[in-house]
Image 1 (cartoon, one colour):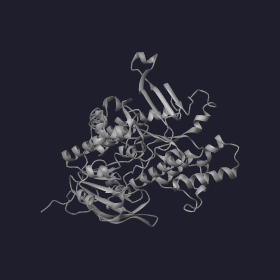
Image 2 (cartoon, one colour):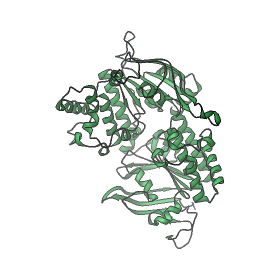
Image 3 (cartoon, rainbow, N blue to C red):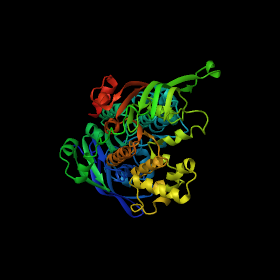
Length: 547
């Protein structure tokens, strides 16, 4: 007779103001099992996980979620037998607080908003250990440092005193994982735990979670849109669409024989290369060129010496590269490699040393003289929700650049340019009534990214800096956005500086590649030279982990 499942969910329904978003789903997780819940944004997968712990505000929840891993006695346990079993959906808020963190822990998708900005990450982890495990402050701090070290954060003792904004995206995600694992929970709910991480760090985190899962018999409910991650990590997969689970089964079987059309659609959403060499010319002047570019930050020096001077941290070391018209230069590297700092220097948002020319000009301290470069070089950020002002309408957001760079245009001319730009990126008013009067929160992630691209294109730039433009998007939406960028490059001869940790995106988009680690350019060349015949061991590791 097989042992009962750790978690049995039956007929789970979640609705908001009478509108059902999770529609009677059933699934189970055995002790020590890894189940992946996969689907596009809006499919209901995150709401499903949050509802198990009563973390969805304003939701009406029904059904059963029998959890058989409760360690502490609860005040209103539903079973008469007194064993470690409870219906999570029927527990009071007091009992759910006892379960959260100790029995069931959660890794949230965005650590910058989940971590408290007013406390160091070490203090936040230690607080969990003091509340749930009864450790003294000294013991809790020591355990927090050990947890940070276990997740691969270098100099864990020093980093434990850092605040969330002082860590890179990958380091913040590791700190969030360390906090979730502090009490060795029986079930871990992991909501996109590797979205902000590069390929090598993803592998390390997955290996870490697998090791801890095997050591503690911990079960994992993984919520993700990364199918490569599912194939490598999970035992079973459940595919969600519009609040329903449309298919579930062992990972190997579902990947080999997807039965539902939606599952097949997800499997076919890998980025496809569709770029042209038409605008590349040896005779034409490069849009951007750099020679021995260095970028550094001041850092405090501990002790008495720090009163009189600052130290220096070199984030980019002697980077040299060229970007021609109509080509894409992909910059790939792990978190903290210096690729985003390189982008800041290119955008003139951080001072640099060495030679850096953009459209034949260099950045200066005079804002007026930089105006031509500001028009020629635009940027599309990683997270359109935070980069688009929530107080401005779509018309104001997209047309903002025209007011600065082409003030002679009338209101009617500016409005017509905005409508045209939005239509170029697939956002027509016929499809979205009152499009210009809407606000960013009224659109999906992929639609917001299209709006961000339209804003960047309004002043007819020569070059776009694309900072992880698809990492926050579902695989199907990611493919659509990449196809849009490819089409715009072919039609307009745009040059792209593409910052990413996704080798598949590099394969689909880039003509040339820079591989960075610890601020240094390890390898550079055409995409075929670097990805088909990598020379550096780090590049070989990146390619091997995505093949």
